[in-house]
Image 1 (cartoon, rainbow, N blue to C red):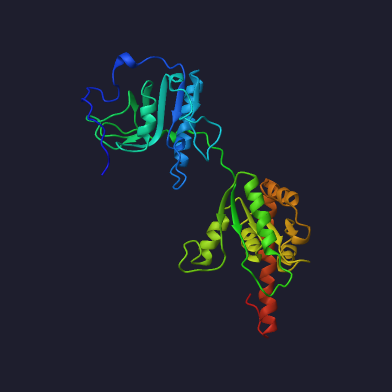
Image 2: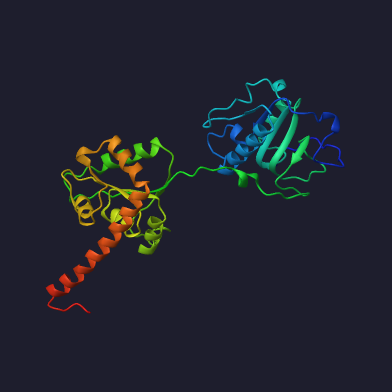
Length: 322
């Protein structure tokens, strides 16, 4: 059962607790789920952080000084437990659900001397008996619904990168796939990117892998694919998606030979693989030139593969259809 705070008298305007407390801000503290430690169960969403960015932008535009209360793993802000509450005329709780007995209670208690503002929040309880805010511009409550302010955030999207890795293959005695995967992970850690794991092994119980079409649909929507698989390379180029291909077999094997057959230049051997070469290949694959070359490789590859039909049927003593 949730602990309930003492009942407050009903107010004519549940968004304001009294005009006498409303004063121009001198310094504002922005807070939200990103301010509270939750080491065992992360709860902060992308929307929470984007809403905070929007609120900070609004304050900047109005010339109002502000800090952002951040808890690990987020960095660059202040610890709300260490700051002096009297330094802030207004404290704004941004985004997320607000209800009685939730973790925001201790936060609100510490800043009772400030004007408490709820911005872009969902109020879980009826406002008449309970509203902890002096000023409330809610996202939704029993009295109002507003669009979530994360709609206004200026997002900078990193590239969407497919990670298509090979499983262990015992028939290659000189394979060093672990070294390749470690290099990929260092690259991923070194710069912003949205990584999508893509497995070409068909598994009827795994969405995204239940059919070749599902695998192809994922690869086709990537900006770049990192792969040490032959079909990770082939199916990426089939859809015109640049691939950073790394041959994990010492001396080169089928991945290198397929890249040569497709005339695709971005293939690295594990023998000479360095973080610098991998990063340079990745950056190149983000360019329009790489996208054009990938499209050309796919088209030329399909044209060359069509000749295999004639060779195959000729080997069987049959003629290819006109």
